[in-house]
Image (tube, rainbow, N blue to C red):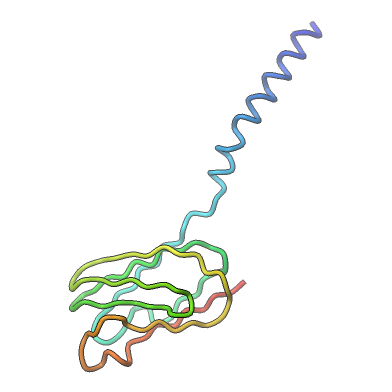
Length: 121
């Protein structure tokens, strides 16, 4: 009887240890997806708030001409063709306010096209 109990305890322990990597993989944070629509000469939304250390996928959509989005201070750049969609995955590693500018010349208002990103703890 004691042998059966010991074997049962060992088997349950082995199954528990074997399932730990699966449980850890399930608890990892899935990237947040944020869709940004670009059109001459603005982004929608105009401001985004993210958490430091949380992975994110920025999906950039163009409704007219080619556009880009570049956060120089975060080393994040994505470009999209006219009428297309592109995405970039990154994890913010510092807090603060960051300004992105269009990185593809899109016309006379190109220089005023910007998006504000707030990264918080």
